[in-house]
Image 1 (spheres, helix red, strand yellow):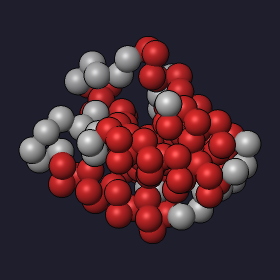
Image 2 (cartoon, one colour):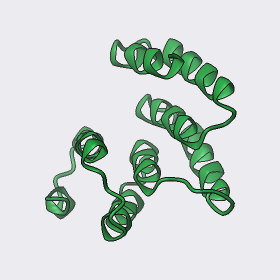
Image 3 (cartoon, one colour):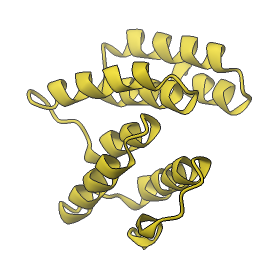
Length: 129
């Protein structure tokens, strides 16, 4: 519930409320990496990239002990402004056949928004077709 509400607040440009709800979602999830990644996305896409990068580091460390989705890591990396690394993760996910159709479109949308937001139009825009 908190996760969905957080994204609704984010889409309504109510960033502080989105971050608060996402933190509540994380607290009630027991530290779920998916929710942690979502918090990093809200932070990163809201301009708080340092905070998002701290969570990226936490997820990298957590991935040594348990599964963290390459798709979620890519999503988080895009939000943190690490586009090249995010594309590398997407390529790994594709090779591992871990790119699921239901998530692929959403992630591609985020990637496009991340790149276009910065005004970039490089060859990476066609790499996921």
